[in-house]
Length: 133
Image (cartoon, rainbow, N blue to C red; front, top):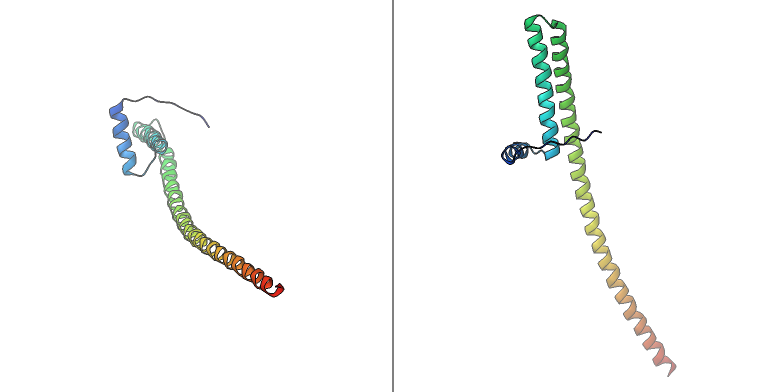
């Protein structure tokens, strides 16, 4: 990993954060999103301008289009996998909550049984004491 640091004015930062928040992105995710968009735009612009001026081949434009199609396909798969993972997490949280509730209930049963056991021992001790006298 490489760490890059940038500085922007407060107004730009607020505008960017608002944009990211509207899409559910953290600051880091938002910066990566912007960098990815910018890089893709710059590359696409360079290839298409190059093709238009004859400095780049049509094959380069085709490769760019194939990459876009492949990326869209992978993105769709990733979205589906994320959806599945979120569902699994939700089921786990429900199961975990049920287990915690059951645990609390069982702890209460154990506490009551311990109290009853102590009362019965005391009654037995009291009964034995009456038999000895």
